[in-house]
Length: 202
Image (cartoon, rainbow, N blue to C red; front, side, top):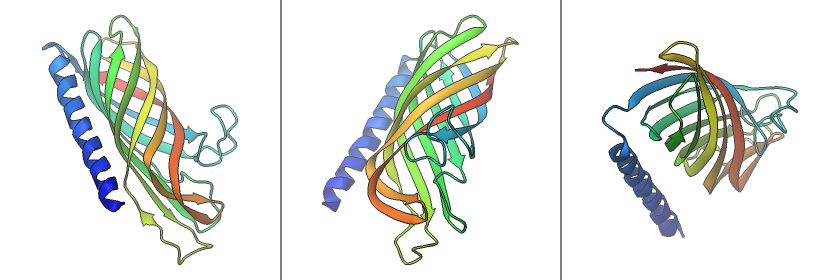
């Protein structure tokens, strides 16, 4: 069983590598580079205290950065984000999550308003510790996952703009989840992320 999982992980990593090479080869020589530091929060699925984008009593901040290049239609992006308090918790619990995704982009990089769509695969790394069950197996775990979503950049200067973005994340492997002070193992992680950032083109 473990050998099968290892083969799946290796296959997904190879797919991500090949996808990256194809994306880079498809970019024109005059593609614009960009970097977008962002801040936001998770909602829905297994995320902390936020059932939906608008029905959220206690937003827990995440932050990260997107770096990539965008051609006339297609682009490529590396998106890295971290959330300290991801899971619904009781006092003494710890539950954070790190995501690092390699994404293909499709967009309209012309004019002051530039919408785009993204999708890709990468690493989802939750860290959990349940205070009510200190003997349970917790700690860090790595899982392959995918993300899909989109957003819009609004440029108020030639190379500086504001980005709004919503994405859905889902792991392809089981991980440990923290729910109301209890560690739950053997489930796939599923959540959304809304964020706002500043985009710098170069």
